[in-house]
Length: 231
View 1 (cartoon, rainbow, N blue to C red):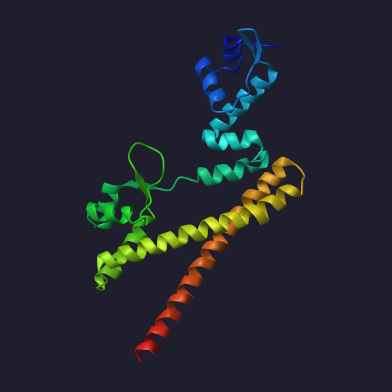
View 2 (cartoon, rainbow, N blue to C red):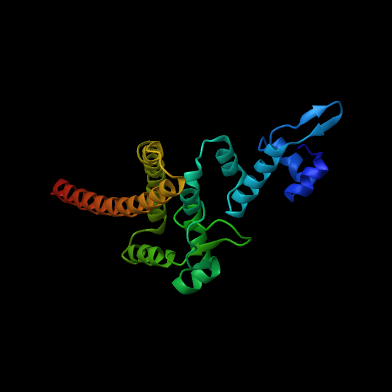
């Protein structure tokens, strides 16, 4: 069965402009042409339903394109959802963060510019995880001890850059050696989906523990070397 674009829109429950937009983005295959008339088939119906299904999970068109092209498997859905839409933590505006931390709002804005405070994406007004209060309190302890604010911000920027680089490498390792292996094992999509999500969460926690312990040990070693050098 074939459809004109208006019929396709009614059947799939989308607007005609949306269909044309998806075609322009490469999300929807071009229709069959018969002179000046274009015809769409059942494959287009299925593709539009799949796009709507993925959109309802909150995925962006960029991510949806990767699913449709086969770069991401159906078994990736739970993992992608967990990464792109993690469980929402308690969130505070910058003003609320300032009030509860006792730190002036302009100073918090400087920390954000340095990459030390990262707002949660989404929404008209930036909001920040309430857990940032703990990090702010730790930074204020260093400042109270006499560490200059400017030097602390510079150190934080350098640390943030290094952590970002390491995190990207860690994600690549997970993708190549864990995700691809699990999917290569085959089996039911739902089972692979559950295993991927469980493994990712376990490794996320393990990575945090590993990084924290490594930093503490490295910091102590640097302090010992500094003492020996001064001696």
